[in-house]
Length: 292
Image (cartoon, rainbow, N blue to C red; front, side, top):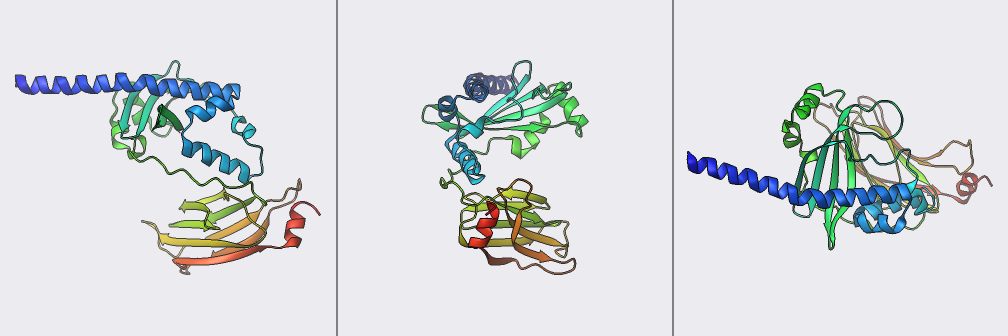
């Protein structure tokens, strides 16, 4: 019994030591990233942000024909401070790490913040930890979890895979040139998962969704390729209505987007599991987008 107790004591002490060693580096990185966002400091933002995230953010901005890097710092609210939040845990898995916090997370948008969960993700770079992203978990619909976290019970963190570091560093996307034409892919797919790839560059996944996403790289003059796969989700029938559309976004204020591609399934019909289609951006369409 004494040996078992000693082993458990050593295990707990080792975990505490690991968290004590990991936490400062993660928080230093997050605070530097947060200050860079507030001060609009491009140099620091580039230095403390994970490479894949930097390229992903840049690709999205130039795909909307917005200025980079200025648009990086155009946020509706500043990133939340960790001050006053309760630190829950910091875990490392290979070259990835996550740190979780609980408390009144203030995004500075007015109103009294309530107790919720903030999970910060990091990846290991050559010189130390780099910031990846933050996930905010609203616990309004999870009162039991909120109470558990208030009491220091981390059961929810342990049982939620998305909160744990995966050990897999996301690949860095290929930088895309600024878009010639801003485009969005819209999918309505109740009961199905739909994956769309446009021009072999812009990849999208929709699951039981009604959502539009920006096309990375935009649409090009002439022919554009749309590849898609469709599969039934658990609980779905595979016979639900489904729509895949691509829109070109007008640069003229007040003008509606132009629908250039559509694949639609009526209720009761079966969708093709895999298919490829195309749409053309003709000179007439291109002129209309800019109001000529």
